Image 1: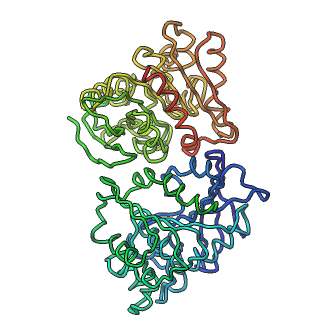
Image 2 (image 1 turned 135 degrees about the vertical axis):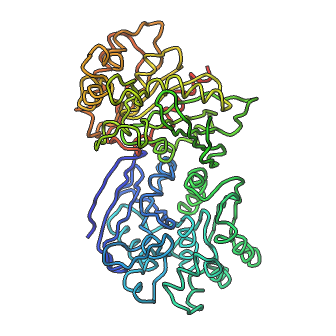
Length: 280
Length: 280
């Protein structure tokens, strides 16, 4: 059962927030949806899923990206989940990059995280099923995200290439098994089984991608991003894409940092990128 | 002396925040400026001043309005001051609608507010002088704002019709002397002198405006705004404009509320409105 907790008109459409009891994360989850003008049972629209970064909730993208005017014009719904399970009963740490607000879009295998931290199942299965049941949308989906959510978007798309028509990311962690944020999170959620880590690593997944399952992928990265060298490493993914002929475009943007000011500068371009595949 | 405290590239231009010691408010003030791409001493650009609403700082508009892509395209700088003096030495109350975060853009006459709460002088004189001294801008100015800042924008423009080429507002308090927010603030800052109150009331100011000083004015108002009837009363201003032939356009927008989702839906329209006068 979805509980509607806010409903605000924007760009001719609607921004709405909902809570529900999640079977994947065993807690109450909140998500937000933007419905473009004219979306109805008689005129269903495709969906862009947006996965946010460390410390974010469903609200950051919706309030700061400036995406709705273009999404309204293109007729695209946008769904933004939270970045982790939350609540008094959910394990937490005094840390911005692990536990609440930092689910990393994996299914945890390690106690005490494995009860609630199943964000992979949540964003891949539970949430899209809910969205397609309750909102005037088609099953045509694209996926995007930022930083930790950029990792999530690329990884989810690579693992489910027939579920999405396209994937994009801003400033993604493309190789979590090779960076401090990823190593910390994967150790905590997945233990020491490096074979399991590889199942959530976009570089490892792309290495094993079959050409029939390639999907169009766009990555935008600011070259003044303080996390670029140590955490993000987009060149690692580009090297694999180049070798395999994977249709990945990396756009390095001079002078931009890791913030939502960067996202708001190029979100229209990402929406146009996805639109061509969502409506193909 | 300006101290630069942040500098982030956005929409091809720059978002920068500064602090300085204010002669008007006798405390450290923070403001933000957006400089469009290409602004330079050899290519100065006009400025839109943005005054924010209750509880806001310089950050709300800059993070949530989604204004920069269009402002970059049009070549308009945007300057957003804080909404009041702040700091340990500045009087405050446990109230969202008076004292810190709620300066109402007046010069206070009443103790203990009259030392610091001189936001009228700050936004009309001190800030534009600083901006024109330190940034690659012309002296051509427009002004806009939201709610309390909509009051500020219209009131400042009506009192200084030759300083600004155009004025606009989202969901403004147009008649503060006749609504609870305004009566509380004006009593606190200005005492019981109703003649003084009238000098900061857009309706009273428009009644006395001379036709030679009329300037183009655009007001956007959502009809689902919960503050519309009790606090905002745009019809009071429209009645005066109609009677006097003042060039005010009120656009009532069906279904929109008082939030930044409303502003982000129509900010491009306001930028285009100002652009025609800023470049005339």
